[in-house]
Length: 282
Image (cartoon, rainbow, N blue to C red; front, side):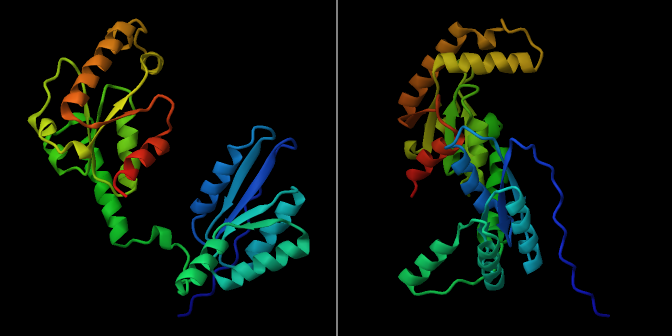
């Protein structure tokens, strides 16, 4: 029994505020790459509010035509990552016909790779998220990070590729998860003056250990907000400046004892700190 081809999907109608702009993302895969570039671009501007509308898994030329017509109505433009030749051709043709700017995120890179290394692209969408060996390595790394998060089991320290240490609220857990998504097996251990250090931590190669520190004022603010969020009194010793200073001094002494690299994360995003750490392994 033959199955009729799936009809092109109608784009979801979205109403935008007249004072709000909209930036369209078009992809024959998920659209994550183009959206990441768009988000990085938006952060460079602080004027008009712009919302991102992502249209992924595009398969038919008609979908591109409707998307460009909508972009024209809202006086916007489209950023796209399309590897299918017919879709790329349709995007170029229709954007020119309608006078809508279309920004090719991946095309120049594909062409540069082809010209430089004399190879041809597979033209297969979704390879970034293909369930290959690299994908399963990431899954394994994420499971590892969850299992050995926040000092749950010291045996994980010897198995980890990266070990993070620091006082509470220095972003050890989110950083562990971010690195895990990049394929690194990460364990983290909280440094608390009253808790004895495990022998596993003291015996590690210091090249694999990274100490996270932060300005006392920044930690005080974060911990105070945390106490407020869980309904505890803000005057608890956990957020007391005297306690925070003592913890930081203890943590610094431990880091120097281990001989690990120390990163001040006070004004750093998770991505920035992760980039510093990954730089030591590249």
